[in-house]
Image 1 (cartoon, rainbow, N blue to C red):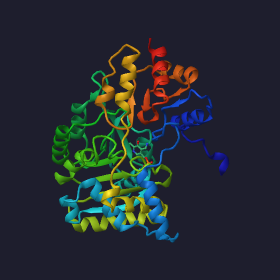
Image 2: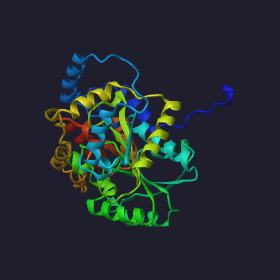
Image 3: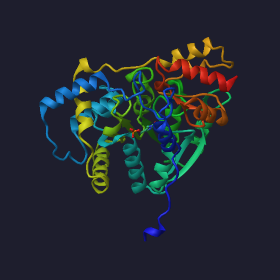
Length: 387
Ligand code: PMP
């Protein structure tokens, strides 16, 4: 049997990370994978997480199995971070929340729920997007329909195209949208556009599937949730994938949740039960450690402050100082961890091969990979490939 196994689809980010990790040159600048780093380019632990670890240590909770659907208090706190304490859907019990293996697991569980309920559902995904979106839904056996998310000439969302797809899709289709800090473009819908979108999704009876992996890394916790809160307030059926990888820098702990908003509270109970059943036969329960830390931080008002780097303005200042031709102002109007530098694949390859500046060929950089120490080198390298 095993001789019939085929190689998996290549993952450019996996390869990029391997090359960057193996590059020991002191000039290395790694702008590839989306991880916050300190001034030495190493993993950066949040001060709040450090403190929560001390508190958790004192609690000595042991290593028993977590329940299949996860820690209820963690889920309640997580849902409130997303929807806001006063959200009607939450108060009226229309939200089914379960713990997941971070954001990836939430996407995958959401896709399984859809596939096991209505296998013929079409899933609409705007491109470019996070490299795992299309494979996750296809792996669940669902048909994926793609459309252009970005009008690259204006470096803005092609909103009319999105609305056209909402209007033309079969009723009951799923629209995968990123809640904030869009990966890889850094370009989000405006609050007005979310409002219009809510209207159209409701009129055409479509289901919203919101993936929010960067809440708090854009304009602030509540601001970044404006889009999904607008959809929830419009009474839509929706699934929301929550990740604590980036905003708590807990990448390896795999901490997240899936929140499904139904239109009736009795439906929410059935949905939660179906999720329990899928989790049981796939991974049984989620890791406990990260959720324990997040619960400690979210239950304590004084620990809720999140750390945010201001690297965008800094990169623009260095670009200006080096008189690098072109309009780079989009760097500061975008939000979140990523930006797509308007470079050709050849220019990106030159940065990797000759300047130890690591980024994928689409020019997407992790803004947080820049530090006081490496930003000058990165700007000079950029100048040498652009000029
Ligand atoms: N969604 C998006 C848009 C992402 O960029 C990522 C991480 N790169 C994820 C989900 C999943 O991250 P995690 O599984 O670590 O939560």
